[in-house]
Amino acid sequence: MTMKISCAFGPSRTTPGDIRLAEELGYDGAWIYDSPAVYLDPWMTLALAASLTERIDLGVGMLTPALRHPLVTASAMATAYELAPGRIVIGVGAGASSRWLLDEKPMRWAEIGDYLGTLKALLRGEVAEWNGHVLQMKHPDGWGPERPIHIPVLVGAEGPKGLAVAREHGDGVSTFVQTAPQEFDWIMRLVFGTELEPGEDLDSDRIHEAVGPIAGLGYHAAYAWSGRDAVLGLPNGEAWIEAVEAIPERERHLFVHAGHGVVVNDIDEGIVPREVAVAGTWVGSADEIRRHIEDLADVGVTEVTYQPGGPDLARELETFAALAKEFQSTT
Image (cartoon, rainbow, N blue to C red; front, side, top):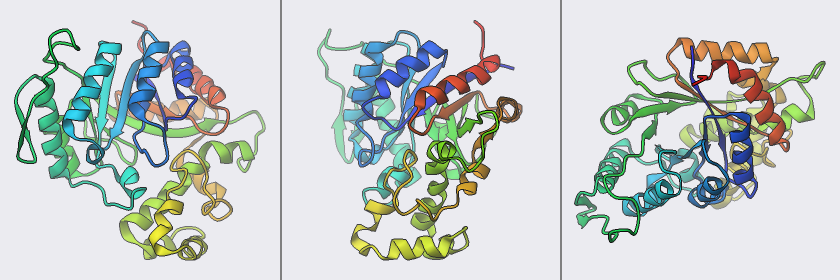
């Protein structure tokens, strides 16, 4: 039973160095999130990481198509491929969190399918069409990698429409709420958590900093998708709604989604119970976390991607790499 063990980051000034450490620790891949309102640029971060590494796969994901013209993305992918040939992957999704931070709705899956079809045609060197306009990568000979350029595409999907797009346009599928059907050869699952120190209390500040941001995601998503009533049923939901509604409606998205997935924001702090994060993430001993990985392997997951959290990312990367090593291929 072997699988790929990767890590993921909301890109910051330290991410290129964190990815270099991940390579040294034996991680197979590193994913870089795409949400410009809260993280730094993923493609520039990937380029810096490529210059610091030699082996580890590098991916931007989940990339939000609405933020970039497909030809811009194709050129970025070609540049990344030139920097790290054979190591580049890409993930594409509806852009829920990144769009919420812009006070916009996620893309429709039909739009994402069209985008991926155009993007792949461009990378093959073909003439493609987008929004009624004819496009083609026209880089002169020697200006970049020769086309066709093959870069594996992972589709971030949880429901039937997204899975249909993955079947038609993707090489695999990524989830973090549920596990994809085993029909896919490449199934990635995003996970969060931290290995306990001996005798550590589950209410410790260290654990709160490491996984607390993940607890807030449930509140953010419920509010964005379904409104206030959906949050009222969550622990301390009424207090959370009261804090949100004290902010002018036009500016709420700036505060609700602040620190998305990486920092406990001012609304969530003190309202979202710490036990929510512990219950919803992999907080436990090394053996307990290994059992979680085994459970994913049993349902067909081929890549586990761990997002380290808190101020000591090196500690989180080191502990997860050590406990997950037995699941990796030795070849």
